[in-house]
Image (tube, rainbow over all chains, first blue to last red; front, top):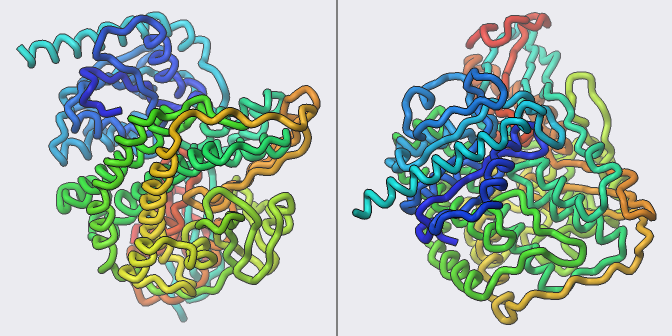
Amino acid sequence: MSARRQRVLVAGIGNPLAGDDGIGEVVARTLAADLLPPGVEVRYPGTDPLVVLGWLGEGARVLVIDACRHGGMPGEAVLFRLDDPDWTEREAPLSLHGIDLETAARLGRELGVPLRNALVLGIEPASVEPGRGLSRELLAAVPRLVEMARQATWALLREEDEVKR
Amino acid sequence: MGKSASINVHHVTRVEGHGNIVVDLVDGELTRCDLEIVEAPRFFEALLRGRPAEEAPRITCRICGICSVGHATASIQAVEDALGIRPGPRTRKLRRLNMCGEWFQSHVLHVAFLVAPDAFGAPSVIPLARSHPEVVRLALRLKGLANEICYTVSGRHVMPISYLPGGTGRWPTGGELERLHRLLVEARADVDALVDLFAGIEWPELRRECECLAALDEDGAYPMMGGPIHSSLGRTWPTHRYREAVEEYLVDHSAAKHARGREGSIRVGALARYRLAHELLGWRAQRAADALGLDPETTNPFHYNPAQVVETVQAHEEAISLVEELLEDPSPEERAPVTRARGGEGFGVAEVPRGTLYHHYVIGPDGRIDQANCIIPTGQNLAAIEDDMRAFVPALLDRSEDEIAHHLEMLVRAYDPCISCSVHLLDVRFVRGGRQDASGDEAGGG
């Protein structure tokens, strides 16, 4: 399905067999269980954030939900633009995947991909050791994280409406 | 007195996972040449034990973000073998189409994002995007197409959870298949451009004969969905005797098991498949092999990379054909029945992008997995990589330590090793005089 048909794509990134790295998928799935506004679709790109560049290139707005090490307490989340230079210039890896989100963002910047159209909900993990299931801290945070994701989705929808106006 | 070398290249990206190259060169004599795998084992087999058999593909597809379709394929085959299930012909075509998507995706990612920087003199894909944006844009378009194949088949770009014993939980509509067909046909120019991109590359010279293994499809198709194991030494084994073809063993310097064949180290993956089955390629892939100057008898491990380009062409053309065949009757196929409800032993083998992948399960009478064994391609190639390094280093002695390290990294990368899907580091350490520098990244420095 083309990203162009959807106004906002929600990407739950991560690997549920790597402990809290599965938080992106859990939050996205919980969000999808509710009635989503028209024009919003939830997808699960696994551990491949490069997919997001393609969607942005096709004109979609994207909410990325992913485990990110940002120095907060486990379960704490930060919301930022994908084009935010403060984190894409970090030397230490923030995300947890082979071609990680920072690499994808830096690549997108070089190629002129509209990174500003993506928000990232980065969630501090407690443990990304192999194993099924989230840590107690992240399980407790899921309702709050879903609400943050819902508000971010609406914010992206409003941006899209303003552009069309 | 010959050369002594002490070089340390720390955190070289562009391989999947965390490994170290340790080379000890003393007075011109190579006394140590190891590829250390230092990641903790992840024990996915233990995660399978006690789980209902039908869950196995959904669990194992998470082992690797790049080979997720391959793991799901080998896993479902092992489950179906144990339960006596023979999926229908259109289900098998759909699964092969998904594998085409994964080959396409993995090979493009490797050659265009991880190998191309070496070929075009860039340190990584980011500067490559600056100096050769057309290369990276081409790669992103092709990777996006590969994602579309997997999304159309399974509803997910990677890590498919639609695989069910005897069938699938998602069947693409005729409209989805028609759209995919259009995208695939339109992409032929991009695929040709990828071949042209690598046609002029001169790969480093290293000739070392090594046993090649691949599981060849029984229907005569290019190896992808598994079958009897064939060796370049002329031997053949049925899938259930895989342990006779591949013997795993432990080494002190690696958390990952190594593997050997009957006469030493083995190679699996694109180069091995090309050597064993090049005559099964379609005409476009054969034309690509000609353009890339790929010799069917090549023993050069650097030729893994042009072989991956050839297989990209093959996967693309096969995908077009498979979609056309599925469009002849796009209605969902019924799930094939279980014929051995009390379970048993099952074997699954698939040719994933990096090589032959084995899944072997014992399913109890309660339908749950009692035992599981998975042998991944990278483990099978580790001993060959080390043998190649030992053969390669003496030819590099007139180079600077930086150049030696760079060539060894290129050699390791040529195999496209996947040490894990969650960590992304490779250290190269040279040890002067047999003493390893404990400080890690500062030793020697070149």
